[in-house]
Amino acid sequence: MGLRVCSLGLALGAAAPALAAAQLSPVGVPAGVVRFEADGALESWDSRWFDGNKEGWGADVASPALGADLFPFLAGSETTIRQVTGLSGFQINLGTLTTDAMVDRGVGMFGLSLGLTRAITIFGRMPLVYVRVQHASSLDPAAANAGANPGEAQQQPFFDQFDAALSTLSARIAAGDYAGDPTALALAQSTLASGTELRDDLFGLLSDPETASPFVPLATSDAGVALDGRIDALQTTLATDLGVAGFTEAPALPSGPLTTAELEGVISDPTGPIRMLTDESKVTFRGDAEAGAALTLVDKWDQGGKPGGVRAAVEGLMRFPTGALARTSRLLALGTGDGQTDIEARGTLDLGGGRWGMRLEGSYNRQLAADLVKRVAPPSQPYPSADLLGLVRYDPGDETSLAIRPFFRLAKSLAIIGSAERWHHGSDEYSYAEGADPVPGVDAAVLGQESDATATLLSIGLTYSSFGAARPGKRNLPVDAGWTYERVVGSSGGRVPDVHRIRAGLRLYFGLW
Image (cartoon, rainbow, N blue to C red; front, side, top):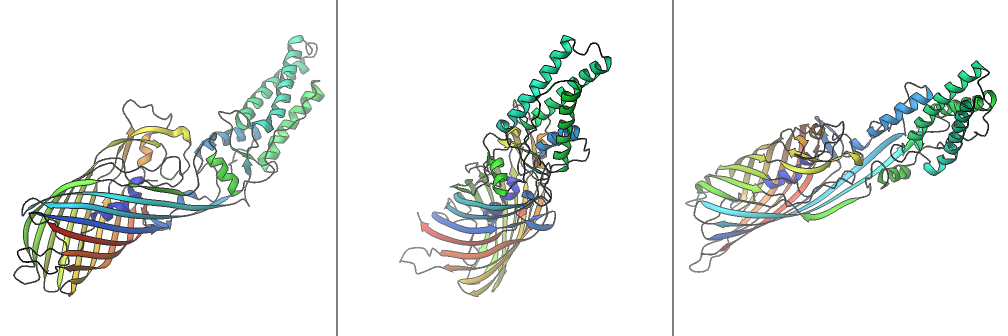
């Protein structure tokens, strides 16, 4: 479902400013000072933005007529059913599927920054991430024309009799039983040919472990009635016109439509085509760690007893693939990392005077390629079959972000702060990894469909900074804290979660030299 876009919460969270110290925490740290940073975020969403519209997070796992739209591997089964029944427009319909989904995520980011000189700071950060994805599906079978395949054991009596009848007919032709009657001989030969073709089609549809469809027509549906009629006609010809008796069994077709529990059972069946768990997904693991350096270009902020001024800094960092990827065997699963390395550059400019001020930020994130194991299917297909698993080369689209963060000082150490941020993620590119076997008939590029996305994030919060009292001969070192409420208010392009996020941050400074 577009892991990179789904990780917007972490991406925007990492780009948010460190809060407070005179209302805006400086990017750099004074020489000889180490800053301990602890940020926490609680976020959740049950909806998303897609192509500018808001819809449920489980919208991809929904269908007005569940069939080959979400289970593309059923297309071959539908073709067989059309051939066997003569119903040229037949499509498998398991009913109307609706799905509600919700994501809860907690992120704890812990880091240290060390001032090497007045201008140069180095830093490192490690996130700990908890992700839980819950979803509930409901299948309304009112319009269903198909149900669960009863299985190979239930079909065996039918195929035993079918094979015996064809074998008997072939033996009688070879023995010359119809040689004296050209019409009967022609009928026998054509019946053997069409019967063998029918038998092979039905065996592939109903019983073959490699190709059998998990869903087949209901016995009472138009396709079920037509299939039984085809079998009845063959049995009548064999017994009445050709003297081959004993073939009376019918194929086992479901008598009732699928229930929600049965559908989930088929999806999670370890021997079935999908093999995907549908229960709640929970992951607690580290996220993608980062390390880098900051260069303070100008620092004339809150000097001479006057609030505000100007301050500017640039940063460069590398983000490492230390997190856990989303599991391919779980429906709607999210991971704690993206599986590839980032190289990011940021620029920060603080401006202010008196009680008012603002921070301007910009960033560019160059995302490097990596090899990943994925089920090769477009993000609109939530149930890709297990045979689509392949090793692909993932080259995520680069990201840019621009933000303005105004603040107003309510008191010397307390301010209200807001933020408006615009974020863009370029199109992801996929190809099969060098030396990897491609999935037959599937272009790896489908994984990158609908991945270009833009989002707007707004936030509001409070920041607090206390310098305390310095001991004789020591520097004043602040304690910073802050709280914000953030959310995505608009988006265009691909899938972007409609995040609600509460964030809190703490900065503690310690002098080393």
